[in-house]
Length: 601
Image (tube, rainbow, N blue to C red; front, side):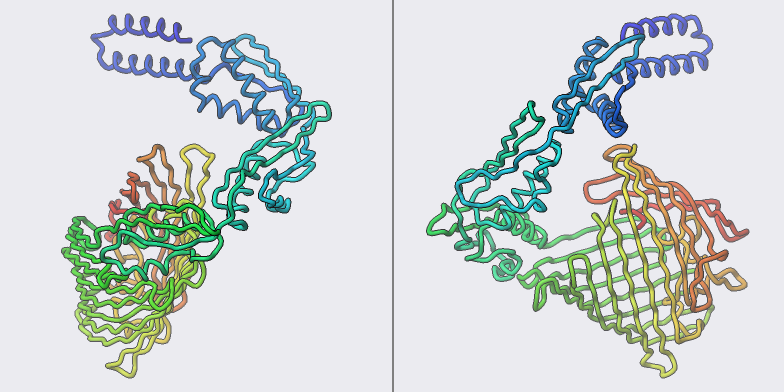
């Protein structure tokens, strides 16, 4: 195939010389030659066509998949230019795969004819496990079959044996105080009766407990604060997994840049541990510039101190100055307050907004107390006071609102900024009371559900992401609710393709009025072509309603589009182009462009 490609290239070059005057034809012809040449190279790398002859249909699909995998990934296989050498090596790979599936007596014959290879597989019987043993001088007995996932009578599948070895290591680490776990395996095959014995060999090791635990390298962090994060204590059973968990706990505190572990020699049944810690720089200053369709061009300036009182307390100041929005916010966060996984945040915020729907000036202050109830479940309760002046339809009103935000969240995403699997469910209930008026009381409720699934075996590893959100305000008529608290739909964080806040009630001048309820639905198909680049196809729908009951029906307006993703080490940069599918005359543009960091949801 290689020499045919060179010959074809020379013919293309001669013809191209003759047609040089016709530049367009010349360019197109060269492109055609290049495509033909690349196709020839790809065919050479892919190997000859093949057909498998196997009685077992399940085994047929497995071997077919193995051939395709080896031809795309095995660089040594792709180096063979001689078809017969290619087939001989591929036949050996098939025999190895059959043995890995417990067919140790299998045979594979091949016949290469007219550029196509036929593989004839005689699989034979699977070899079965006749014994599973733990060989050791420590006196430790083999755990139950349910722990290993391997038992007498099972087929000797290589992957199952490897998984059993890993499970055994984890079980030994969890249930025994071994200073070192050195585990090997010895598999003996008996062809006469098509059976095998599996022995796991555990090297001799002392049984020890944790002794003295020392933290070295701290300068500004209180040692007691970090000790509370340790998942181990002196006197308990030694476990290297707990050492790894301790190292991760230090790094996740966001106060430590590097951790190394030193173990002393076992003595009197104990082993001393020293954690050598390197503190991070605790202060960060960040400056950013950007553009949002709702705010215009903007400048942000953020500062934080992550260890203001020497025990992980964080002081943050965020400022944002844009054409149509300005904010200044300060937060003081106390992590692990009173007990672990419990947080108290005190905050103050000044904000001014100029929207099509309203103009507002707002000052708020309050506190939010949150706690991790379970591994993925977090709940919060707070108290907030807010004073605002809101101009709505040239009418200005002042509000002094006292609210009690209640939140509950279940987060099982694998990544916050670029989730590929898992789901997120959240709900917030916030009762409001206007303390300057006895007539205004209302409750604002909202909830959302996000789900993600990635098809890892498909080309470009597509991720399907879906989102459903809804909310409602009750106990007050719409005109009484401050315009800046009502629900709006449309825009980059809502329904892409439409102007900000325009999906909902409009007055005679087509100015958004906001609603007492809303519904939003979104779906994305995310494709990743390379490590850095990908694209997204999306469909969004939503609407804000005058009534208190959200609806899902004909009122929803839909937008669709596509986006480009550039994946960085911390989050994807996204550019989305959205088109309104239900375009309204004299209101909606032909398209909307959005640029941001992180996935849309």
